[in-house]
Every structure is written in structure tokens, then in C-alpha cells.
Length: 527
Ligand code: MSP
Image (cartoon, rainbow, N blue to C red):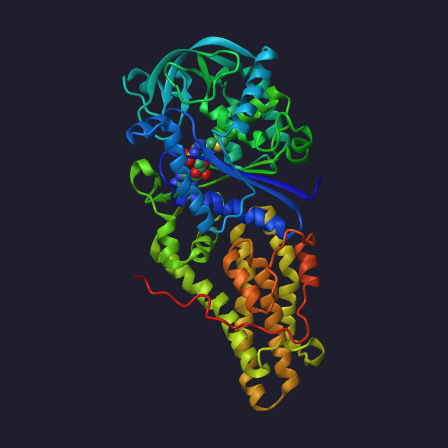
């Protein structure tokens, strides 16, 4: 079905509260989900928490809680943050929920019954913070000679392991199949730098197998393997399966067929290998289709070091929102860093962006226009047929007209910067239009029809830009929409019009009453 859109985020480890990096993934996903909703599509936006494994078990132990009590408590700051950030997900899946456990066990049983799993002894290394196995092929000769080896992903020491487990064979054939898929589906991994990275991984021989279980005696906190009481499901396999367990695998075939394959898995580049290699291999073994796109974003760093709780260099999104508001944070992360690149968060950069774009362009256009409507037309939107047009109006009309298509192209490339730039160019131009047209002079000359014409152009530009801003800064956009005089929210699930149709048909009513309210984005000084 062309008009359904299934988008997922990673399931976050709940060993520590969320930071800006997690918030970024969630904001990007919410922005995409909202954009598709605004386009009249049926959207399913899934997020959740990764609650099993050694990393969580150890964190629970240090907190002197049982793992279950620990995770029950630790999901709260995540769910609270998503509310604060106006992230509107449709489902929040926890890997400790019975619906997920049943589904994971069914998947493993299916693999086992189809003789896809082989019991063997695993000899290698394990990184607990990344919950990732490494084999001798992953280390340089120099590293292999050293007694302490470090994780290729996070550079922390890995633990040597020798234990029994069940393996899913990957082998050369599956590897060739995936390479072929990558080459024939350029949209499978975005951006291209990440596709190339996966391509080069696939050009070298992969480990022959993916170990899908771990012994209970070492890792007690996991989903029991349905075919062997001495094993639990490897936490990454457990977590990846959420993308299908949440939409009906295996019991609700109709639901699964409706939503699967997912349109977009949004992830950070740190978990590319798991999503772009292991997940497709698992799906292939289960006889399911691959997701359409794996969308990998860059890292928020401090200097050039990845922001992470264990390094103690995190930015707390709640604190940023408390100081600058939710729109400032959402706008900043989406506008500041081209998608796919790493970004450095500084308060200076946020304040600069806030003043330059939100205060100067968005807030100014909104407040100045509404102030003039209060003053010159007693807060009523002038009706189009009472307005005198001028050739000077053309520039704004053209910008408005181009906006839906520009936005569509930018969003199809996940280019949030280009999308926001196009909206802001229109708003900035409208601010200049105020200066050029000097409505106060037209009012002084009692040239009412032209005064109405100027106001109408400004209001139209606000109407269109407010609609298009909604996926990015929904809180502000809803306020702007209400200020323009609509009683209903900007977006309602029942509306199936595309954005372009909305723009054409959601017109002002004659005499619609605006509600000026307070300035949206007063300028900020760095505190
Ligand atoms: N639990 C696994 C994912 C399983 S998905 C089936 C996991 N969790 S995580 O909490 O460690 O990280 C999840 C995601 O958080 C990352 O992929 C990334 O999207 C985001 N980020 C965590 N730190 C980040 C930064 N410093 N910068 C940007 N995003 C980062 O991996």
C-alpha cells in the first residue's frame, strides 16, 4: 500500500537516562513520521526499550535492584523525555513484554525447526557495553598479540569467551545475496557513505555464523530459548526482532502483512552492522522481506568524541528544553547538522540559530503580521475579494507555490536542512515584503484595499509556512495555527489530504478571527 508508512527507532538501552544522542534519533524519526502524516498517509511510528542482556543486568546489580524492577524504573525518563520533545509515537515496545517474548520465541523456534541453527562452541571476545561479539578476524595482527583487546566499535576492553551456543549460518551464499540486494537497491542504506561502509564489510569474508543464544549460567537476564532451557536469546537478536514482533509476527498475519516490510529503520551509525548485515540475514532465514531503508545518522560529539553516558560527556535534553524550549532544541538539531554528519552541540550555536532563524524570521513574521491584523482590521482576516493585488505579491506567491514540492524532494532525500531552508527563505522574504510595502504608510493614506492585499499576502505565507513547519517544530506550529484563528488542531488523524491538497484547500474563512497572543520566540542572550 503506497500510503502507509512504517517507521522505527532503535530500542534504547535503559541502563542510563537518555541524552541528546538518543533525543536526536527520536526527533528525526518523529519529524519523518509527522511529515508523512501531514501528507495524509497512514503512519505507524514504533519506538521502545531494549531491556535484556548483561549490560542491563550489571547496571541493575549496581543499583541493587532486580533487573525487572530496574528497567521498570529506567524506562520512565525515556517516556517522559519523548513527551517533553513532542514525540508522538504509535507504539512503545519493551523487550520484557510478553507479546515480544512470545514472538521472539516463535522466531527462534521457527529457525530451529527448519534446521537453521547449529549448536557449537563459540571462541572469541565480547564487548558488554556494545553487547557485541568479536572474532579473531575483527582484530589486527598487532591486537591479537596483545593480552587486552579493545572493541572495534567503542574502544573499550573486550572479554574473552569460550562457550556453547546456537549459531545461525551466514556463509558465503547469504553474503552474496545481501551484496546483490545492496547493489540493486541503492535506497537500502542511506546515506551513501554508510552504504559503502557496509559494502566493503560484505566484500570481505564475514564470520561464518551469527551466534543467536547465550548460556543461561553466564547471562541469566534474557528470553529463554524455546528449544533449550540452558540458553537465552542473544540480546541483539531479541531486540532486532521487535520490528516485527510489534506489528503482529507471527500470530497476526494480516497486521504483519499490512505493516511489514518497514519503510524506514532510523538508527545511529554505531549500530549499522547489526541492522545492515545481521538483521537482513535473520529476516532472510525467517523468510521475511527486508526493510526498505536503513537510515543511519551521525553522532553528537563533544570535541570529536562520541557523546555517551559512560564517557560522562552528555548533554541533557531536558535541561536544554527547560532553558530554551522544545522548539529551539528540535529546530537546532534538525537544521544545524546535515543529515548523516556528526554534530557538535554548543549552547552558543543553539542561541545563534535560535536568534537568526526562530526569532528573526519565524517569530517576527508571525508577531508583526498578527499585530497589524489586530491594528488595521480589528483582528479579522480580510477576505480575498476585498484585496488589491500588486505585481510585488508575485514573489511571495511563487515561494508559497513551490514549497510543497521543494519539501517533498528534500524529505525524500532526508535533507532536513534543505527543507527548513526553503520554509525559512519564504518567511524571510515575507519579512522583507513588510519593509518594502510599508503597510503603515498605506494605512495612513487610507488605501484600504491595498492594505488588505498586503495583509492577505502575509497571512497566506504564514498559513503555508506554519503547515510546513509542523513536522519540525510541532509545538510552535500548533500555536501559530491557533493564533491564525483555527479552533481545530493543525493536524488531525482523520485528514487524508496530501500536504499540497491541504495548502490548496485549508483556506481562511472570511472574517476569521486571529488570536495574537504572545511573541513566540523572543530573542535570547547567552546566559
Ligand atoms: N539497544 C541497542 C539498539 C537495538 S535496536 C534493535 C542500542 N541502544 S543505545 O541506547 O546504545 O543506542 C541507540 C541509539 O541511540 C543509537 O543507534 C543512536 O541512534 C542513538 N545514540 C546514542 N548515542 C548517540 C550519540 N552520541 N549521537 C547520536 N546518536 C546516538 O544500541
